[in-house]
Image (tube, rainbow, N blue to C red; front, side, top):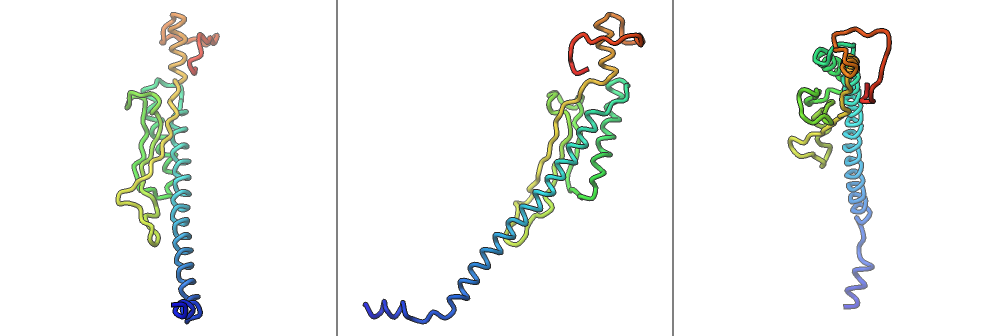
Length: 176
């Protein structure tokens, strides 16, 4: 028994370096491919978040002094135009702007993008079928200048139709 153990220790070790190289190389390749997959998807996701935020911010701040109903259509159009400036990403997804008239919860006013990741698989790493990323930017739309003017004039009991150019009054701070 002792001789058998000694012969195993002192036996033929040819190919050991090859096996160690194959195991180490495959582990290293696995590790590198994993981080490339995650890195590419994170970078594209980061730019997608920026595009959604920029479009949402454009929508939420767009105001040209008209009534809210008239401004919303133009604001949605401007937000979509800003998002389209990031067309070089070729994001395969659904971009939408949620206006205050579309939903009941005011905090969900803004933009969102549901898109497929650019890199579905590299090597042994594959995302599940139909896997999607979600980017949201819900900032809440402030009242337009015309709504603020109307609120102040109603508080002064002068009606929204009256033009007041002589003075500016703030009754309470509601974002106006």
